Length: 138
Image (tube, rainbow, N blue to C red; front, side):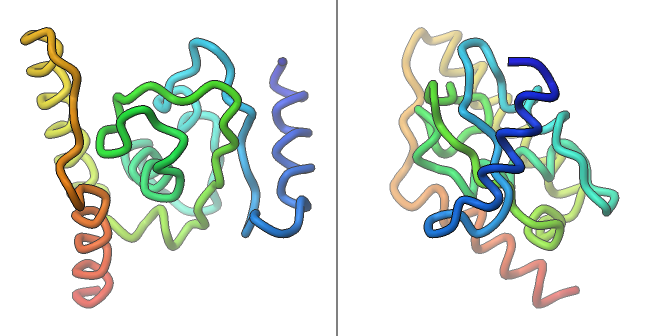
């Protein structure tokens, strides 16, 4: 699927009705990474790719084999809801960079050990708490 075809899919999905609060990306194809998808998402505001990746992870946990890490494989055929600019910017760029760096280290450690990464109970809630803390401070 070329760039224009995915854009058309995203536009159609943004009008999809129940179950879709806004625009979406998908379906996820074989070999696509969250890094690549986040790079394709254009925003009106200045948000980093790290902020976009974390917002996509938060908004679409069931689309990831490992829903607590941006390095987890995306499920083929998944439709990713694209968070709005406020949701993407909820975690400031510096904290998002630090969180992605932490997740990258965790991912590499598990790969080096040859073990799969298991998300701790309540892991997605950690990101939600960071979001709430940022909103109160801002």
